[in-house]
Image 1 (cartoon, chains in turn red, brown):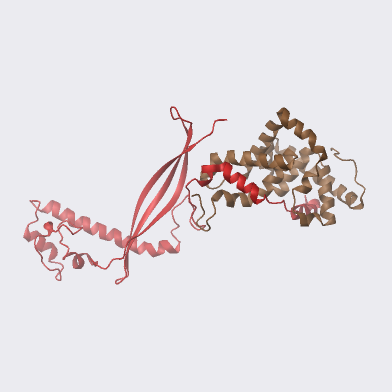
Image 2: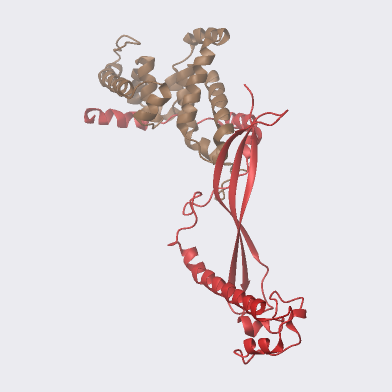
Amino acid sequence: MKEFDELEKSLRRLKPRPPDEKFVARIESALGDAGNLAIRCLPEEESAASMPSPSSSSSSFFRPLLFFTGALGAGLAAVWIFFANFSPSPVPEPAGRIALLGSHPDVPLAGDPSDDPDSPLHGVSLSELPPYSGMPVSGWSDPQVNERFLRMVDEGLIDRPGRLPARQVRHYFMDETIWSHPASDLRILSTTPREEVILIELEAY
Amino acid sequence: MSTDPMNSEPIWKSWFARHGAKLLLFARQQSRRPDEAEDLLQEAFVRIWRLYGHTGEVSPGLVYRAIRRLAIDWARSIDRRQAREDKVALDSPMSLGFERSLEEDERNQALLRAVERLPAEQKEVLTLKIWGELTFDEIARTLEESLNTVASRYRYALQKLKEWVPEELEGQPGTSGASR
């Protein structure tokens, strides 16, 4: 409809008057809790419906870290399997332990490692942990905890005996904890998925 | 609190700042009375936001549809019908719905007067298309008409405006409320 282009442009130049503040306040009051429903929006680059893009700068920062964390986890699992499968008793045989630690000449041989309650690793004492894992034990900053909203699923209406029906909405979050060790510039990222169910009471008309 | 991390405003307020003006214009057109238009928009918006607001983004088309259905319901009630009949003494609702500075322009005033003369069914299509920024498909669903019908009404409306605006500028308006 090219013949009307000019006319359409003229019409579009007319701007509808925005609602006044008094009216907005009225709506706010009428909305009540529905206006304050807990929901967060992600920044533009992070879609609420998807995980961060592999090409994003933040993920490129965490990719080696995640790889390192995974590799470390696999290594620790291997240690656990070694002790679980090759030790005839719950307390590892000295020979086995010596054989294992033998590949790490700097590891000091402390007392019985299984007795160390402060060590996060069964079979490795706290004093053995730094050289063995390649990670420092002290000097870690307080962990940084982030909560990321991933997506929302509307699960429809539910009946509640003796109460008003409600709309059930499930929110999916990813809780991230980042530990950082400033001295060695080491960071560890841990992620935990979490769900929240919200019931929105509906009014009967 | 339902807030946008980039600013501390609740999400519905940002949404309403984006769509409120055009929804109010449509509500004015459906109700023909400014005071009723706000009630209509409030009722429609609150109903829709309570149902879908948790998503953080609601299609404006849903609110347009709710406004229209409510306007029809309200028009059926005796009290509201009486109020509708009283509307004759009010100023032109279209001109009330636009920013004042623009009304001062002679051509814009003529344009608004010409829009005002359009039959209601053409005016609502024009409003939804031009200021509501809906597609013909969305307009068809909002008005519960076929796609061809709304597209035709839009075209007829533009044809009439093209003819009437020069008349209005010359101060020789044709028959008010003329239909196609």
